[in-house]
Structure formats: structure tokens, C-alpha cells
Image (tube, rainbow, N blue to C red; front, side, top):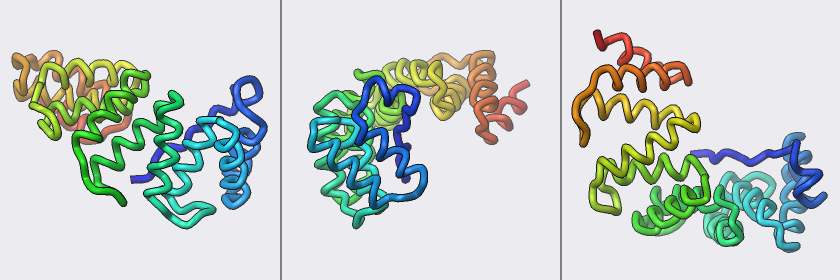
Length: 202
């Protein structure tokens, strides 16, 4: 799965180094070699967003040879400098076993760190692990709590999952009104299956 690349152009001038800003501009222009050089310089200067962005490029093999171990190293630098997108990507890498040994407990830990840092995709993925019992004891109550948090912040799949849970009484009391409400939200966010589920509930 290709990761979301972080672009915060409106804030770069105030918050980030010229190397991060210029690297992002180079990336948008598809000058990946220059982008990787600039992000590497920013990372070496202690800029966590430079480390994160370079990690994404190593994951995708853009401007550099694809190298998941290098991506992990860079995302760890970002994560432990409180760039929580780095924590989220580490969770994805360990959950899927992409270039590393699959480790659900490591994935869970990184998703939790990401979610605690308000990375909403981390919250969604953590909720999914609780819902499926992957790497942790199954806990629908915790999953529901995390899906609600993510749904409220615009993660369509969390809204869809909540609709499914309320429709099928998965860890909650069946409530078709709530199910329809969450399916409608996910439908509005563009999940076609959720539109069908919304219409199917009379």
C-alpha cells in the first residue's frame, strides 16, 4: 500500500527548514532525486518531517532504490521525534511484514503511539486490530471507541466499520438507526459499499 505523503505547504515557511520545503516542491515536480537529497539533508539536520518524507520515498522507491529496512530506520527517527505519521507507517510495515518480519505486537505498539499523537489513521488501524483480535485480545468496545474517534475526524472506513458493527451486533447492541447513520457518513465520504448498506436498511 502506498503511504500518504505529508505536504503542509501553508506551514512550511513558518515551521520547517528550507530543505523540507524545497524537497516537497521538488517532489511535486517529480524531481525525486533532488527531493530525496533535500529530505536527507533535512533529516541529518534533525528535522523529523525530512526523515519521514525520505522514509516514504524509500518505501516507494522514488529517487532512491526501494529499501524497507532503510524506511523503517527513517520512520523510527521520525516517530521518536514525535512525527506520528512515522509511527503510523511503522505500524503498517510491521502489520504487513513488508521487508521486515511480520510482528503484530510491534504494529499495535506503533499504531497506539500514532493514535496517542492524534494521527487518526493510527487510531483507525488500532481499532481494526482490536476488532479482529490481531496481536491483541479482541475488544469490540475499544474498537468502537477508536472507530468513533477516527470517523469523527473523517476516516470513511471507520464510519463504515461502525455501521457494520451496529447492523450485525458485533460487540454492541444492534441499532439499525445508528447503523444507517454511520453507513450514510461513509457513503458521503465515497465508500460505495456503504451506500448500498445504507439503502438496504429499511
